[in-house]
Length: 112
Length: 114
Image (cartoon, rainbow over all chains, first blue to last red; front, side, top):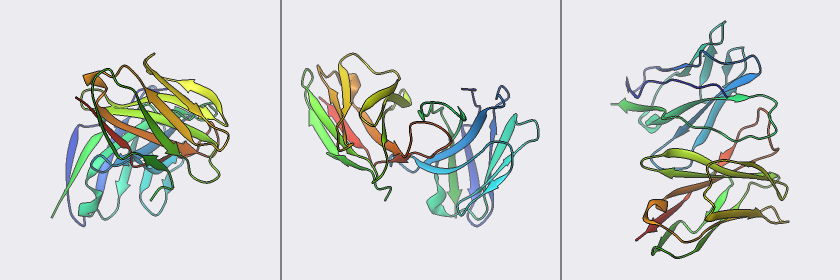
């Protein structure tokens, strides 16, 4: 699975959009980009995943660049409850295992 | 609530002891994963089971073992415990073994080894 690079920490004002970048320059064509988050020692929570098209769900949007070497997770209207560690993970699409390899993630602090 | 349950929530024990952590996956999920989260190592994948059989192994110590039972619940056994085994242990489940599916994580078991 390709390696990912994320900023260690970011701040965001409550009510504003939070844009979390992830670099995965060695991603291969059969690898998905996944985002999970972990709120203060709770179990990680799935947010969204994508292969090459932009994706949106009720939680967030995922923007993947055309060359697929980077992506951005967008939380459109961040709230204090969005304060968490956000993990960007790249994983082979048709793998026979769903194991997730977590990096250090980005600690997002949403401030009032 | 992810639908994944883990017991116990907290466990305090002494070095050299053995403990068993239990996980019940979401209804309908066939695959169970175990992860360890310690302060210095972050979240690490330990082992995966799918429909009762081991599917993938990560950085799991030989002192640790796991199994998945016919009713699909799983147990992680930790023996000869050391101080460094103190960590949060998460179980996750998914419908299938691989592919682009999301995993649902339980609330974790916090293990403290004294």
